[in-house]
Image (cartoon, rainbow, N blue to C red; front, side, top):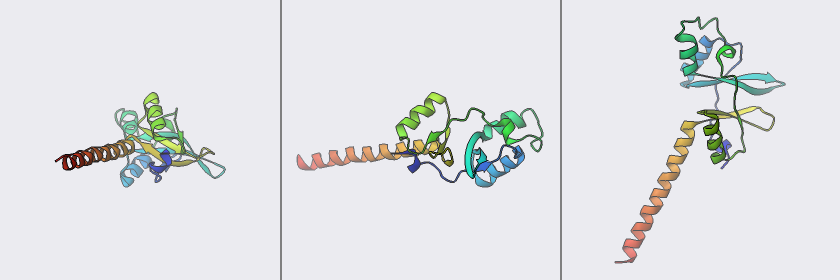
Length: 149
């Protein structure tokens, strides 16, 4: 299954020069823990960074900096890892583990942002799959019990 089928396509975005105050307000408004920082390159929104709620706490709040004076570009995770939308789920899991990331912007062939894949999305998918397998085992056990009486 490609990650395009499970990624969240409603990604909250900011520009690198947006303040962290506006970034935090967007996170609160949309009830999300991260925003993707994008550059507009010829009409294509290309992800260049990510800002998480943890970044806001560690980089701005803890050192008591002015959130209206600092930009998303100042605190974004600079070495952004992305994945193409046609990548398989298990390959994405291996990649996220190798890179040590919990969120992965998903891009199309031109590098444009199409969604974001979060660890939570993967846990939900795997839990559903495991539940289906458990139901299959239970069903087979019932069939055997009935047929062997």
